[in-house]
Image 1 (cartoon, rainbow, N blue to C red):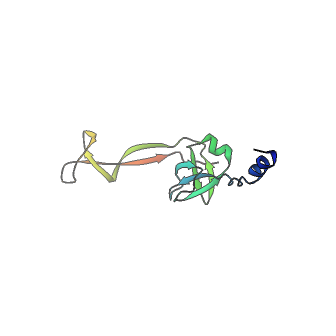
Image 2: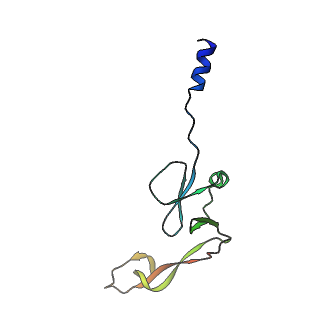
Length: 113
């Protein structure tokens, strides 16, 4: 291989595509996954630092990323709606025809910067 051939091959290398860092999220703004691929779904473009940190305490609202200042806590609470469970054991799901206590998930601590 001659010098001219080497430099021609090097010059003919196609330009690389720009890198895109994406956060895919659901309709509520809850993150699903981070990716650099063009996949189907709803996403926002993020910077490399956010992509590298891969934070899970974030939400997307109106196309912007917000980091949560507090942890989100989800607890089971007594409810008039929700899943019917045995009155003595929340782990046992029963039909509505049996005696039951309804439980639903309650989320606390959604506060953003």
